[in-house]
Length: 387
Image (cartoon, rainbow, N blue to C red; front, side, top):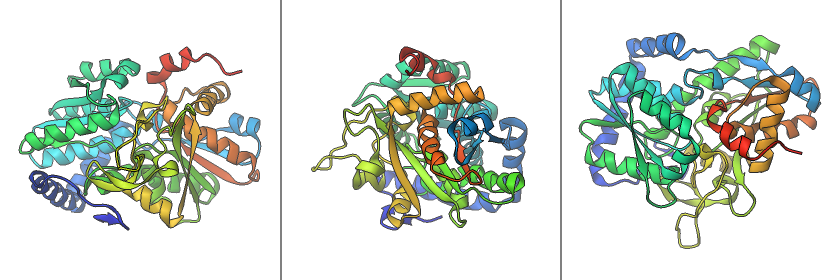
């Protein structure tokens, strides 16, 4: 597990957290070599989480768009409705192995908070979740789910009251309670070893895509597309495909067009945030800029350090699309395939359908549909139907 991805990554944290990070890395290295741990994780992935998820041929969407054939990797069908459970389940088992009795987490869209609450309930671990007040208001169904699952939800009233500030509060809690508590970080961000651990647990997505695509048409995809906020579903999609011929495309949140949105790879520059060196939205003095996106899971001023490295290397292409385009993609997928997706992967859908039009009919695109849209129905309805 690399501590650095080129110049990115690292562990820019107070000295009080170094022993906890070292303990976590040692515990993870031990667990990933332990056949018993791997067997327990695989069994729960199958029997409790519902893996493997399907690789679905979106034939009506493909016919309407023209060009390449589009397949959807259905992470929205994982227990709880999003890819977030892949990482939460793995880290939950790891925290129990380390003897921690309490889980804390941050959440933006609420899906990671729900996943952590589900895992905490299933493993008998006390669970507390930090969530910005802005996100709590726009993601009320997930707040209620967390509470029903026995988790305590702490409103974050500082700063922009969104995901960045929820991470800040979770880190403060962990520094204070590091002996008894595991911080179940939800995305491929933060100090080492979190980006590597999250990538490992989320790589089940890309590993299944490789196997399923070969079953479907005998080869890997020509193009794989995923949305990028912190970047966990995208790195889980991309990492197992890096050694293949598949072109990889990450789509960030461009927002409403009045500012930078939350597109740190597309519009940002290198800096340090939340214990890592990566691309950030920041001003000339290094102060973090406010972000904006209709999709709260993408509403973050940074990105995982492996994505920063993959951007610089040119192996992965990154772009951004707007709130309006994501909303149009939501309605398109609902109308053609009977699927109500989360607003986060709608960004990937929006760009993928444009790329499909320029590709041949015999080419294949896989879009990681990272979550379902139950949480976003009120937001989508408030914007009406596109013209």
